[in-house]
Amino acid sequence: MELAALWVSFAATAAGIASAVIAWFARGDALAAQKQAAAAQERAAEAQAEAARSEGRSAAATERLALIQSTIFEGPPWSVSWFGGDTYLLTNNSAVDALEVTIDGQPDDIAISVSDTSPRFVGAKSAFKFMF
Image 1 (cartoon, rainbow, N blue to C red):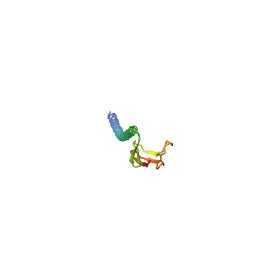
Image 2: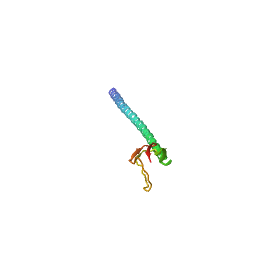
Image 3: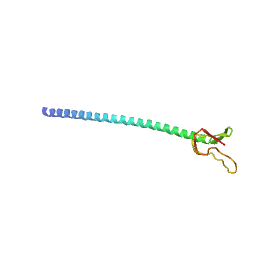
Image 4: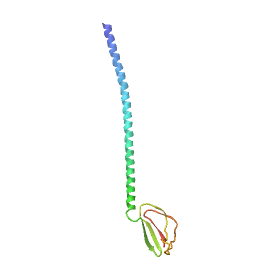
């Protein structure tokens, strides 16, 4: 009987040791999973911050486009004003640069002479002089 009790005690001790080893490995797996979850959470926070920055840039671009569109159609995009003598200013009143701007002496039945008819660049809210 004592031998049977000794075997039962030995089996119980072995089972306790085995469950302690299994618990130790389970704890290691749980710590590894916790580290992976923390890294995933950090990556998600970075992605969310980047999305917010991108959304901010997108909102700023949309606002800028709306401003340009509103200023384009606010009034006539061009104005001509007398500068002095035979000289006038052609002003680009819009918020958009103009490329290849020419001044023409049309219609043909009027005797008009423009000093420079070559295409030129006129920046937004800027002007250039011409003789007429």
